[in-house]
Amino acid sequence: MYTALYRKWRPMTFDDVVSQPHITATLSRQVAEGKTAHAYLFTGSRGTGKTTCARILAKAVNCLHPKDGKPCLECEICREADLGTLSDIIEIDGASNTGVEDIRELRDSAVYTPERCRYKVYIIDEVHMISPSAFNALLKIMEEPPEHVKFILATTEVHKVPATVISRCQRFDFRRIREEDIVDRLMYIAGCEKIKLERDAAALIARLSDGAMRDALSLLDQCVAFSDRIDRETVSNAAGIAGREYLFDILEAVADNDTPRAMTVTDELYAKSKDMSRLCDELLMQMRNLMLIKTVPGKPELISCLDNEAERLKSICERLSLGDILSRLEVLQSCAEALPRAVSKRTELEMALVKLCNPPVSGGYSSDSSALEKRIEKLESELAKLKSGAVPTEKPQKKPAPAESEPTQTASAPQSEFTAKETSDKLEPCRRWEEILDRLTVENPGCAGALNGSEAYVSGEMMYIVVKNEFFLGLFKKPENAASLKKAALDVTGINYSIRAKCSKSEQNGSNGGKSPVDELIEKAKSADIPVDVE
Image (cartoon, rainbow, N blue to C red; front, side):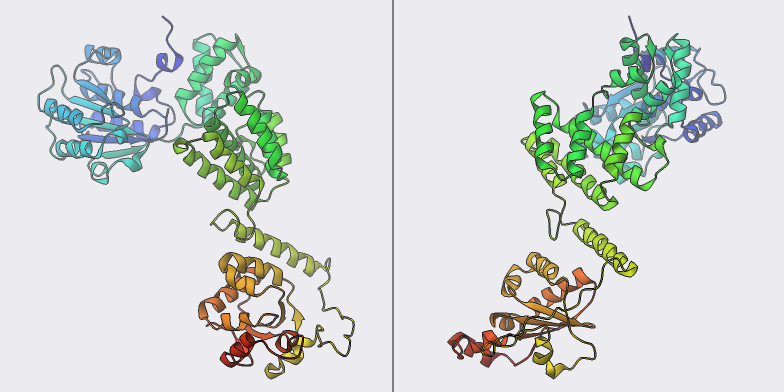
């Protein structure tokens, strides 16, 4: 009967374990000196050797003839342990034995002495899956364990294990296996199995396995079934990464803000029964590649893709800033977290794609700092152009002289209106007033509405606002409304302006030279000059 490579080549002793010398050396020395702990906690990502090391340690502490703290693999204890027939080494799947009754049964059986071995060893895999009440039952025996009992807990999600349990264990963190170690191991196994494996193909397998030896051997098994000679193309076909143009079609649509194209490609994939969660994961991985290309150029070994895909990724990367990439990564990450709970995975992913193709603007779809970052990038770009002289500074343009019957409304009008506040610098129109209003619309829509048709002028750190609606002056007597305007101006310009406001003469006098009853009431309630400063 054929045995899968990852099972056939599972390490039998500490010397065979790949990329975990900090763990295997410590454990073998503890066994050799007879100083093993009563409880261990092995943590790390999948395929890094947690369960394998647990089995080796269970053999080593019970081996009849250990060699430097390592199992001899020849005595009857080692042989039966390798066959899985040794009753004193008990493996428990935490995912299927989650209840408190399962742990109570373990606790009751632990009091009995081993049948044949020195120690009774309990290996609990994926221990984070057991329930809180089961953890409490386990904690009781871990506090005062019998001398003949040892526990080895393994988990991929250590943050879900109670701190009270962790504190009673010796913790060992398993690292992701280095790509060069995976390549060397694959080439060694291929030589023993008479498999024609090219080294660059092994390198691609190592890259796709994401630091998991088990995944690498499983992929090698797939390649063996696919072709007698394994090269990079074979790996690409066996792993299903060939013909992934759809990923880059979507990414290009995102870079071009082309929502229809992104939705069309996704619809075609859905019609072909493409799993939406898998598609999201693939997009997330490629967006990570874009981030690495942007931040660490010249490091192709960090990118998980084929050579021809790398060129296309670089082309996409040139169209996006780092801020664009990071904000889109956050959207995909949120989508990936929401998909398992989504009623419609397709709808959830399509919502994410709409966000990706429509980057956030002032107040956009996100509550994070991405919109502010984009504004800062834009401002820095404008400042750089101004310093280089590429863009001339805007100056107030003269307007035609008004007819005698019309009230004066020129660029210098605010200067005369604000004579009570003589300024040392000449007033100039606020060039970013529309952006300030956009920002204020997000923070305080009511106040922003009162400023429709208004104009703003600046002089140093003073801002003067000319409004057409007297309601604005009454509204901004409230400190919270004045604070909203100051904050919007600060967010957009970076300047903490002191703000003054006046109503235009045309609105004050009215078309017939009089005032409406509402204006008269407001006039009584306000001063002639309304400061909106908030300290």
